[in-house]
Amino acid sequence: MDSLYAWGMLEWARQGKHPYGGDTAEIYIQHLLPNWPLEPKPPWTKASKILRAVIERFCQTYNVSAEVNGKTIGNWMDNYELLHKCDVRIYNGIDGPKI
Image (cartoon, rainbow, N blue to C red; front, side, top):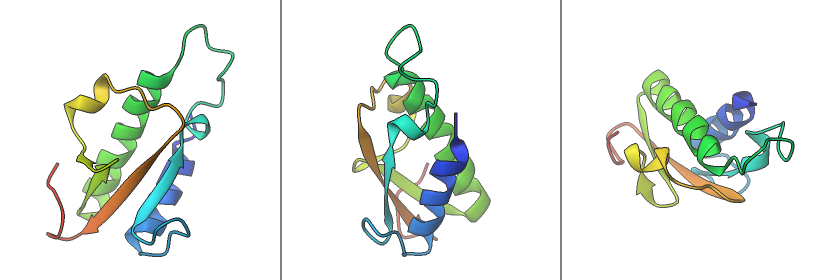
């Protein structure tokens, strides 16, 4: 997994400088799963779990909050199938949803 890719995208969004949408990062799932399509089963749920872990750590590190595709991150991501890409919006300080 290349969680550094996701972290970099989140950092741009935290600074409001992501080319996709300022405070919103566009995360492509294939970057989180470098061995896909070699994996034996579709890795969409695995990608969601990886992304959740990265986002939660990022939010703790920078005291920010986040949404994935308009929803506050949480347990729903453990069974969610991220298919192609997702949008992750970063909220600085107390502006956004809480984890």
